[in-house]
Structures are given as C-alpha cells and as structure tokens.
Length: 375
Image 1: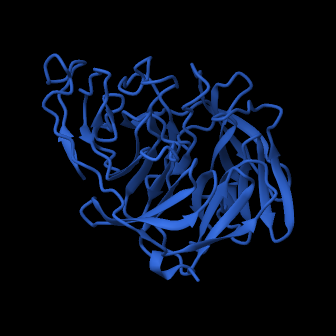
Image 2 (image 1 turned 180 degrees about the vertical axis):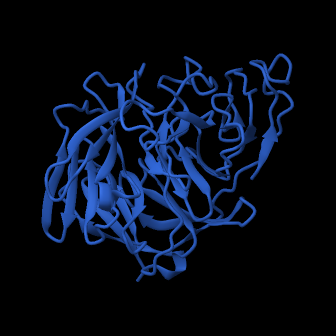
C-alpha cells in the first residue's frame, strides 16, 4: 500500500508548513470508456433508498434502507416494513437512516445494527433484535455523537474479519473541517471506528480509531477474505477518492490526510497531518472538471457471474452524474486499468451484493438495480 511514515506531535516533522516534504503518490484515473456491464431495475417505488443487500440466512430476500427511516424487506412482490423509525429520524440531504449491518450470527441471534440521524441531527447507532417473524425489539445504544453540522455524517456499518463492527463518520461538516476533527485522534469524527459488540451485553462498547484523516467516508467495503478495506471518501471541491488498505489492527491508526490533502492534492489550509501511523494516498480518483461529478459512492469487488467481463473488478459511482467506473485491483495493494463505464445509475447511494454475489445498486430516485452482461 502506498504510504509515508509520519512523525509524532501536533506539528509533524515538516517545519512551518506541516505539508512540506511530503511527496504524494498520484492515484490512478480512468484512461478510456468501456462497457463491461449493463444495469437493469430489480425493484422500484422505494422512498430514497440508501442501502440494499441481504441478511445472513435470508438469501431469497433483499433488505433495503429508506432514508426517511424504514427498513424494508423485499421478497418477490411482497414488501414488509421490518422497522419504522420515521418518527425518530431527522431527514435531510445527508441525514436520515444511513447504514445497517447484520450480526454475522443474525440467522441465530436476530441482531442487527442501524446508523441514523436522530431528531436533533445527532448520530446514533442502535442494536435491534428480531425473533422469528415478529417485529424487532430495540436494544442498547452502541454510540451517540453530537453533530455540529447537518452534513458529513458518514453512514456505513459493516462487520470486519475480526468480528468487530466498523463505522464510518464524517468530519462533522462545514468546509475544510473547521473544527479540525479529522486529524484529532481524541475525536470520533472523520474516522473509521471499530467496536466489539459482543464484548459486553449492555452499554456502549469501546470504539477504537482504525483510520483517520477522512472527510466523509459515506461508503466503505471490507473484503474479509483478503483482510482489506476499500473506502470512498467524498471530496470538498475538486477530488473524489478511492482508498484501499490492509486491516493491520495491531498497527497505529492510519491517516488519509484530510484536511491537509484532498485526494493527493495539497489544500490551501495549512493543517498538520503529523500523527501516529502511516499517511496513505488514494489508489484511484476522479475530479469535478466537467461540473457534473460531486460525490463518490464506493462499491465492492464483483465476484458474481451475471456480468463476466466485470469479474474481479472494483465498482464505484458518482451520486450527481450517475457515472460508473470499474478498476482492476493489483495484488500489491495498488490498482490499474481504471475504466469509465457506459452504464449509469442516477443518484447512486450504495453498491452491495445479493446472496449470489450479484450487484445491488441503490438509487435515491427510488430504484434498485443489478448488473448484467451488456447487449
């Protein structure tokens, strides 16, 4: 993984400008357009879906989050509202019901976890338990965090290969991280955190910082087989980035450089990026040059069979333009062969998979798409 060693201390080791002496590695960018897959709708009529996937032991259904606060289970033409938090959720452009994760033993213990903005706009992560076909019972609160602004709430929840629950939180909002949260290891904002939800039966677990220096990691994906994470970090004005790193949990937290860097570009804010761990550079990026792009939505490495030419490639998209890209992961942690795909998904909010490994792509316009071979 491309990285630079960092010095300890708030000023780092770079003199007056803490960014002096850092030579960023440049990310891969698309070199052409291609059509390795096409998209088709598999569900419609949903209310601003923010996530689509499957629950362990429930392979025949698709579970969907709706931003206003509903968890919906789709099986064929049947739709079941499993949880309705609409009376507890604040809905906004970047607020609402944002993330879900199913306990790895969900098919036995019925536990799932929701990440949402409460009525005051603050972040809550709450555990629910579903027994049989009955309504889930609200359990303990795993995290509460005040949000200084309405934007940059992060959103993703996912279990890692170590059995811990990972959570992505943005830097707290405002331009250029005005409260300097992303580089502050005492703050949970601008971070990827992890907690052992099974460590205790009640109360909040201990959350640990795994990655920091992030602006708004709206979507990340953990490849448990390869013990690595892919993070899509939403940029400020110029750059949308894809990050890739091994999950080396016995190492100090790793730093992605925000707000000193946007992607691999230096920002005008002279903020220290000195701290423990490695400074990591994005492996891929795209810019806002044409004015259409605005917000990256990270995806997954595709391992299904419906779109053979896409096999083994990481897929991601842009919320504003609907543009899609795919890239080839290299074994050494870098990437190559970045392609701009002809397929588009408008207002794409999430890219996941069904039980067979086929893509599920959620659109805030109300639809769920899958990928198939072109033609």
